[in-house]
Amino acid sequence: MPIPADWPTTEAQALAEQERLRPLVQPYGAADAPGPAGADDRLIAGVDVAYDDERDLVVAAAVVLDRTTLDVVEETTATGRIAFPYIPGLLAFRELPAVLDALTALTHRPGTVVCDGYGLAHPRRLGLASHLGVLTGLRTLGVAKTPFTFDHRDPGPARGDSTPLTDPATGEEVGRALRTRPGVKPVFVSVGHRIGLAEAVDTTLALAPRYRLPETTRHADSLCRRALTARQQAHVS
Image 1 (cartoon, rainbow, N blue to C red):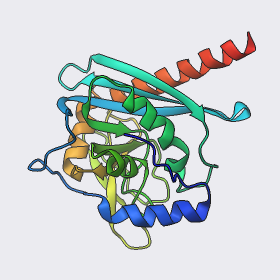
Image 2: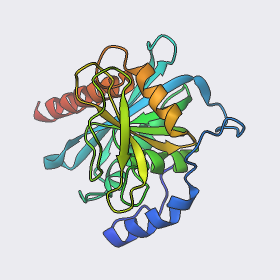
Image 3: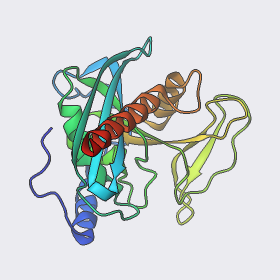
């Protein structure tokens, strides 16, 4: 999964790349279509990143779990220079180079990747999860902590309750506000690539048996933060 040689460096280039990639997103399950060679549907990965803006560094983590037991099978990290400035709606260009490096370093090839962010719940329908899915061919979904710029009603209080996440400009449903823990604020699930919304919601619930966030995100978040701290301490010493 090499990083494209012509990775955008300006806002105009990034916007043009999103417009180019958006029609390639498959916002539905593709059980009849083969995934990438070697992908194992029994495995699911989480990816996340941590930043050191002062040193212009980003650390990405990829953690592979067994879908059935939620045990960690493998974990990797990748460190690099921040590839793009912070611009809302263009976060993928800032994070993806390091995320791709971390995924490439895995010896196990997960069938699905969960991103700490958005997929179709994006102004141009190409958030991090969708962008990653198109580049890799992997099944992807986004599970975010906030609704970004979209509207929703608060779901019911029970685990599994959900309501549509909608674009206020068009009324289009772009995801679901999903209650993963009783009485705890919801997460926001959206399709990334090669998965339908119902499957994305079911997958999120299966990955969150005890906590608000899916285990994939919890492990990846912890790993990238620990790796960044180790890098910072090594720099100081």
